Amino acid sequence: MIARLLLASLLILLPVPPVAAGEAVPAHAKRIATIDWGMAETLLALGVAPVGVAESAGYRDWVGEPALPSSVAEIGLRATPSLEYLAALKPDAILSTPQFAAIEPVLGKIAPVISLATYTDDLEPYRHAQENTRRLGALIGSEPAAAGLIAATDARIAKFKDTIGATATRPVLVLYFQDDRHAWVFCKGSLFDDVMKRAGLTNAWTADGNFWGFANAGIDQLFAIRDAALLVIEPVPPAVRAKLAQRDGLLSRLPVFQPGNYAILPSVWGFGGLPSAGRFADQLLRHTELFERGHAS
Image 1 (tube, helix red, strand yellow):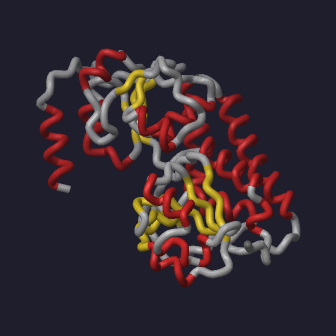
Image 2: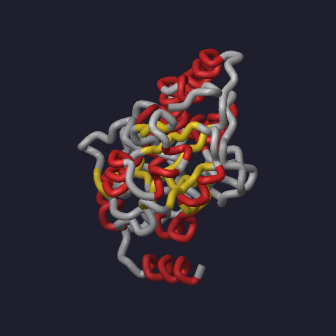
Image 3: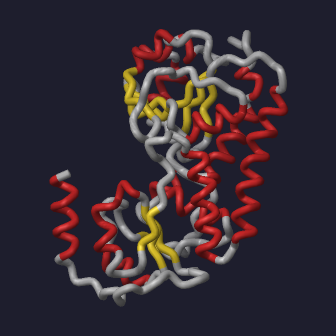
């Protein structure tokens, strides 16, 4: 908390052209900058490329699609964006999330700040992602596009659910690797868990996680999980990829890491909005057989 307040205090001292007091967001804002990748992907899915995105290289590695056009400017780190770069872009609005609340007063000197929460105490990120999509649609004057994105995402999840039908399925474990001994395992409150519930799947990780819907877990904690399908999401650290390929070390002894028991998925942002939810549903559909009870190597 002290560090966040200090950061905000330091940023306030930087010279930034102020926004006129009480300035409102234009009715159909088009020049929008965002420090959140989930908002960036949603804007792109609605047909509007943001003028600037924080940590754009990270977006390309961790989010992947919708692809970020080369015309989108880099505005620095998400927690400490460059105020000079932002001001030069002359945005109509800046999109944020509550985790960046400490710097929003400073960002508000450049353009009106719109803070949208997807991850909250009620642990319903999918519903909030729908609400945020509607708000962004209204912001850019594309309410029909927002309604279409919501319907299309629901349909992608329903397609998987219809495909498995009455088939008996086993629990599914979803994770990002930190290194060969630690992972972020997605649990209740995550976007992935919300999609799986709607798709008729059960999360294999039943322990609590954090506000964002994931648990920091040691790989040894996965020994207790037996009959479950595993989805590993890119980017996978090179050392982990090598050990998986060579059947080397602790990973090779875990039941969930037996050949034919897991799949490595292309990048899907675990803290995103509806575009990430839809891409995750598509990946579930591509690996339907993995989830059938009795499926094993």
